[in-house]
Image (cartoon, rainbow over all chains, first blue to last red; front, side):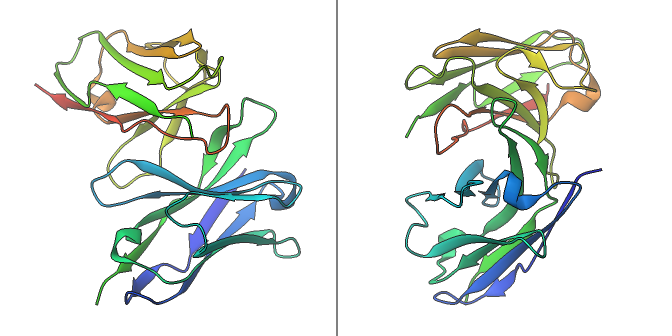
Length: 119
Length: 107
């Protein structure tokens, strides 16, 4: 059974930093197209970042230069380092696997971790 | 980036109704269109992938159609558990953008 378990969210002041983690079981992070998707309170889904199998990364314009996606193969864990946080980064952050063998559909989601940026 | 536009943004419906939600892409995305259902406080759940393929375990009252730029999600007979928000997503090119969502509400 595949499980994605996020952690690391919390309350942080504007300008601060947080690192989110997504511990995977039942799949190998380094062999998959792994993404972070966020959802601000009462809003829709916003794709944030992706880490390809080959190590290439891509970021939404709204987080480019501030967020960094990475993985630790030995821990089978995906990360999102978030710096210079702003109030508009407040959201539930989901870790997600896009199935590269099936139209890149997101077939596994974590439960989400809430990040609140506020003074 | 490819923009995804859903309509309507909300819909008041009743149990037993037939519901259709549309999604339009700003450029052709072939069949790379997926539909998700989300309930409050939960992660999205995959319903339909590749425009019309039903995810395993999803009731057959859900169906999808379309290709290119225009797509639809149809619920043939709405059940109480279907009141939720529905999102389309293109997975044709990075970033895999989502539509803004359609919230189904009880009339």
